[in-house]
Length: 369
Image 1: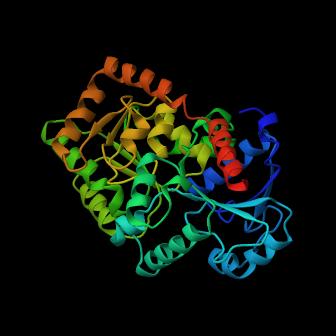
Image 2 (image 1 turned 180 degrees about the horizontal axis):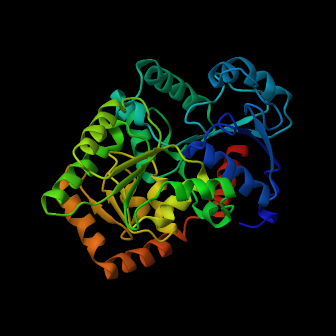
């Protein structure tokens, strides 16, 4: 799509409530989409960031700001439409003269209710239900998310479009500063290791990787595992098991949350990347690993098969023995790693934020009609 064809979409008010927060998938999506829209000639007005953008919310909570302040902010805005990117953050009523677009990344609180708190589960379901009635168009980041949304919520299928994420933000990574480089060296990471990246909650299914490591040690292989990601709701059981396995001599290295440049530096060094999740609305971490040439073993659940295609090894999320065998194969066979690395790079090259912006603008144009 060229700039000339985008003239009907002049300006967009964007939900920026996660703009200044520690990087999450939705925060990354917000920033990369905004940048790509600007490159397509669309003016972006960032609303609700904590301190950035045109209308920061300051110390107010995201929920309180969206419910109490956002409607008046939108009435004063000259933007043609408002794009809520955080699953449900649309106003509870339509705004005169404004079109509404909503991005739904997943419906995890509805599919896996025990992975979130009870208050958040109800907030998610009630606010999403209302947002779907207010939205002129809905964007889902995968066919999987679209199918789950249509199955579990009342919404006109013709208004729901699939627009995948990009991954070429990795082409613009800043170099490590001196402090980060020294910290990375201080980690003394092994020459070869398996990397898991993500939170430690039950949905991420980290226990499958731990089961696989136990099986590998039974076979005589002590494979180091590095875990990069923050604790989350329900992480306690996995964290306690990690502690027990470390006490038994397993080489497990939980690093917690890492700033993006440092995290990707760790990812580049990994021998194998593993992602055993029970469900993902998109599943960006394995695509990032593929972009960096790291061979991946993932579960065949949720949207992951749709995203990784045949460029990553797929294993059922309850088959620890097969997971162990596939990790062992890649761990021991350099040629297999090289083939998967090349396939991953080629696959990831098709996911760009420019394409995301082009398809998003097409949805905007439909909403404006």
